[in-house]
Length: 136
Image 1: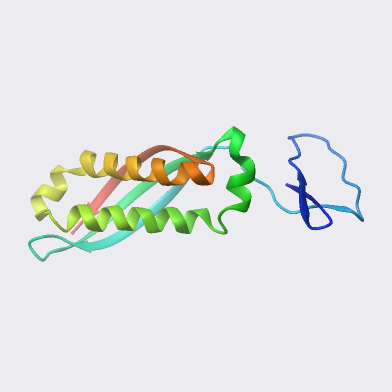
Image 2 (image 1 turned 180 degrees about the horizontal axis):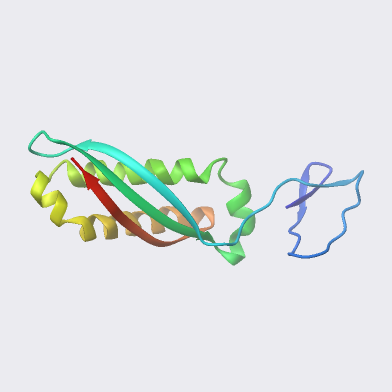
C-alpha cells in the first residue's frame, strides 16, 4: 500500500516498483496467502459444564478488495475472534455436553456461514472453519 502525502495513492504489485521518496511512502503490506487464525473459547453448556472449544479459521484476502482489507479494519484477527466467540457461545449454550461433542460439524458450518457474510464486506474470504478440539 503506497500513500502520497498521507493519502492512498496505489497498490504496488509484487516485484520491483519505484517510490518517489519525499512524496510517497510504503505504509503497509497485505499478504495474499491463505492464513490461519486459532481461537480458543471457554463457554458453558446447557447442563452447566464449562467447555473449552478450539476453532481454526482459514481465510485469505479477496484479490479485488485489497484496499478494504487494509483500510477498513485495524485488527482483522481480533474482529474474527469476536465473531467466532459470538457464534460459539450462542450455539453451545443451548446444547448439553454430549450434544456439543456430536454437533462439531454443525457448529463449524454455522461459524463459517456467519463469518463469510460479515468478513466479505471487509475484503476477506473464509476458506474453512474447523472445530479442532473440545476439552472438558
